[in-house]
Each structure stands twice: as structure tokens, then as C-alpha cells.
Image (cartoon, rainbow, N blue to C red; front, side, top):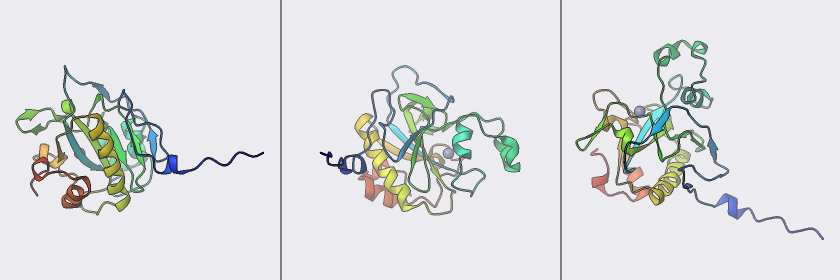
Length: 205
Ligand SMILES: [Zn+2]
């Protein structure tokens, strides 16, 4: 006698969660693409800040694997003239959210990803030490997709269950003289509404 097919609700509706090492458990919308561009968080640094970014390579071009290759140090910098601008960089983020809402994890949240650079949040320098970096596939001026806001909501929920995150900032807020992302395209009131963050945990808009 044939067994009944397993119900799909367990995979389709299962929420995201992080394992002890800080990797998302397997999920249909999650891909792991480990980046070597990380190191240990210093001392007893607690992960208390979320930093949002945007990226697309080349800027404004979506859907390919250039960003993940860039974070994995496998991007062919000769494949596009614009890549000369980033040829010497060794960077990463913990997560990359594609326009489709698919999530790529490149660094465990217990490790320090290299996403924020010279930065400061409430008198504290070096935000990489105590933050999780999330890159949204996009540009500063083109609205992010609903699928991205949805994926962000699920991811933030998982992160807040694993780490005592108290605030969220854009890269532009913690490095205002150098950075402009995620830019005016990011809908902070929508993020606040969808994630239940209090105003004091958000950047002033
Ligand atoms: Zn950034």
C-alpha cells in the first residue's frame, strides 16, 4: 500500500531559524554560500545591532551571481569595466536577499562579517564587531520588492530569537560621510510596521 505523500506545510510554512553556530537551518528559500571574508568577533561582543545595505553588481543589474562571487572572492573582475572599482576589496555580509526574496547566507552570525567598515553607532566604533549585516539586492533609489520585505521580516524574526538585537540602522546612518545605502528607496516606516520595532530602535527618518 502506498504511503500518503508527506504534507508540504512543514517545509512551506516552517519559519526560519538559526543553529548554534549561527547558520540558518536548511529551508527552501535559503542558500548557504560561505565567504572567507570574516573573522572572530572580539572578546565577548554581543550581537545587538542590525545593519541594512544594498548592493548590485554592476549597480542596477539584478539576478546574477556577481554579488555572491564578490563575497566569495571568486568574481572575475575583468568581466565588467565597473568591477575595477571593487577589485581590491575583500568584504562580505552575513546575508544577501535577492529581488525574489531568496536568502543567501555567507557568514555565520556568530562570526564577524566585513560589511560596515569605519562606522559608529551611539559612540561605539567598528559596528562589524557587534552587528549582523544584511545586503538587499538593489540600488539606493529603486524600490525594494515586496518579496524582499517579506524575506527580511522572516529573517529578522529568526535573528531576534537568536541574538539580543536592540536596534536597526542603515549603512548610511553608521557611516554617514562615506555611505548612502540602503538609501531613500528603503521604506523605513514599512519596516517598522512589519517588524514591530519601536521608534527609538530605528534611525530618525
Ligand atoms: Zn553598505
